Amino acid sequence: MLIIAGLGNPEKDYRNTRHNIGFETLNKFVYDHNLAFNKAKFRSHIAEGVVFGKKILLLKPQTYMNLSGEAIRDALIFYKLEPENLIVIYDDIALDVGEVRIRKQGSAGSHNGMKSIVYQLECDVFTRIRVGIGAKPPGYTLSNYVLSRFSKNETEAMIEGVTKATDALEIILKDSVDTAMNKFNKKKKPEKPPKTEEVDEQ
Image (cartoon, one colour):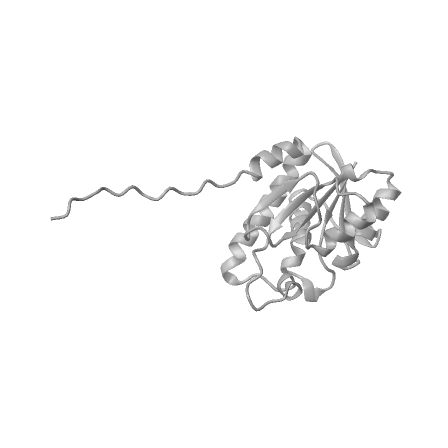
């Protein structure tokens, strides 16, 4: 069994904010696979099912971002699962809007939800799908920025990011984390400047 947690904040005021892109990814996944968030447990909205032969529990913690780890810890303990059975989907300011990266472990960085998870599990060895929300622009505090909404110019890239993250999750379930990493972690090669022909001065 796998527990798949998308991070975000509850309540309408936080809907569609950058910090809630983990929630949005799970919403798309649930829609695509005819599941539903129709139960409440572990201080979370949950959906259950079998996808690609894997039994999964989808979790949207309702504890607010800074306490996400408490809900996830409770679910892991209840099902007697190890952190290796956990996948976390969350927003990342280190990635451009629409970019996705997958990792098997690592530090929490500046993300308070991830800090809470690592603290509660006393472990950073679990799969994470990071969805880019863009770097903080000048004039914003970090908290104000992650709680802001995407601009009209960013909407298409945001939808692309959610779609990529959903695809990554499907690849992990169908195949492996490594396969998803090979697809989404490739760095773009910088474009070479066009060659210019030398012209003799007249």
